[in-house]
Image (cartoon, rainbow, N blue to C red):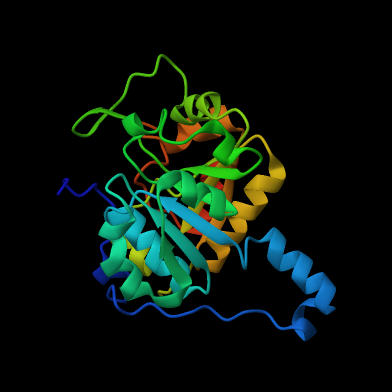
Length: 252
């Protein structure tokens, strides 16, 4: 296990254990206007979407658990085959299923990459993510705890180059899996998750999912400049911030 970063929250500090997840309340039609307006709003926020998660290590499995707890469906995939995911699928219940990576991309409306960065290129056939929101939640390291030297390019810039038909959003990569597991349902001010991308609608969809999970979405800007802020070596990586702290930092 990697050393803890100074200032990083431990699950004990946010008031819940990893088994204390609970579903978040949904808005009613009376609170949000007509049913049609509500449905359009929920779709724009990412609700009722089937999310594909490629990579089912500690962080990918954690994301799957909190998505299901928040009422989402997930399709899981890893490099070892769907049969290896039977225990996790059984734990998550009817809202979860397993597939090969390309099949997960085909079945999901939104896809999250949670594999090691060096495995991203060639992981999927480009057509599988054509016109889909592709969340780059990977982190590029050149060695243990050392950011990779990408020659001034952001890791998400490269992901967008490898999958030119996808709408790439950098997100869900800055928080330790233990904090991710519990902080969204903890009392108190929400912690921030960041989004960076060049397509505003895609960022809104990812922001909706972040909100469903109990976190505060904070936009860091375009994919290149905003993504670099989030990746290893950037000022927002592994730095838990409340919504107010994150917004103050972004606007400074």
